[in-house]
Length: 383
Ligand code: PLP
Image 1: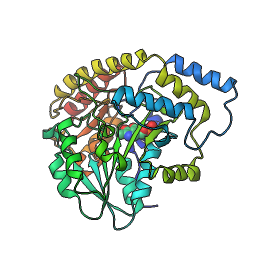
Image 2 (image 1 turned 30 degrees about the vertical axis):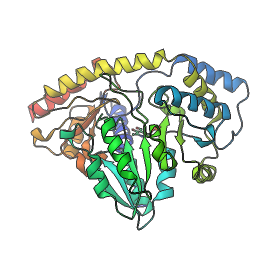
Image 3 (image 1 turned 180 degrees about the horizontal axis):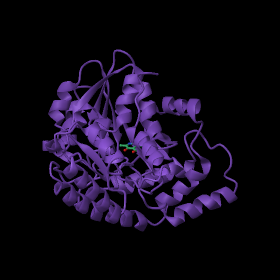
């Protein structure tokens, strides 16, 4: 168990709640959850599902109608045709990565993963006994990677390659050309399966397009695509996500589900059909609000002495370079929380390559963003 890591966002949340219980005022710029309510049509569908008696287990793979709705959504937003047979509905975005890493990770195997990146990848890779091999995401490349460099890191022991676009914590977006090159290069490495975490696919700005691994028929037989409802529909607490799996291995994933959660929550699944098939204007409105905040947080972060921040292109995180302050990221995290009352995350919460950076979530009101950054600037000035 000592190999298993964690997601520091939940630890900082607990610390912030303790400080609030002591009467301290905390601005929350750490958690990756939209600050909006779930759109009312989705909530109404959930309420109706409860009244209609959706109180039992569903098939382990999910309600067939929901799996069909997922396929329609993939066709609309990714232009890819997928069979409902290859869709596994799971309780959140995380189970798909859990199942994939459990399936492909074991001692002697190597798994490539983004660093800085979502911390659960590295945590699960270590726990599985496999060797984590970081794909460096560098600020000077817009926090993307060079396909050439990734291909060079593949060895006969590489079992899984994890990609995340748009990315947490950097807000970076993988350009189509780079994914084209990666997929072309993978032809020489047929033993490598790809897990593409696309949970922020609808949160893109400045006309950026989402490039999905499902758009590459040449790797469909070894690509797993992760998405879910948490971020797009402000449904983090409902716990619902899905994976599109190669038909050769989806039965194993289903078995992992039967051994862990049986199935995702039935009421949530019914509400999720409404999320996908109902009006999408709430998604557009949330995205427009995040965009406005993105421009503000970018400008305000760059005005803080010692900080410099590239423009995030997707998700709802800004990842400023804070090395100009001369203070280590973890120390800044503690100082900002304890002394300034601002919860944000050290870049090192996302891997060793996050040193010299901090993650600020802009899933909060403009007023709170401005207040949080005013406190951060004042804290640095007074030091
Ligand atoms: N993947 C990425 C990149 C994330 O940032 C998150 C949540 O922050 C998840 C997956 C997990 O999503 P969920 O909360 O639906 O499990």
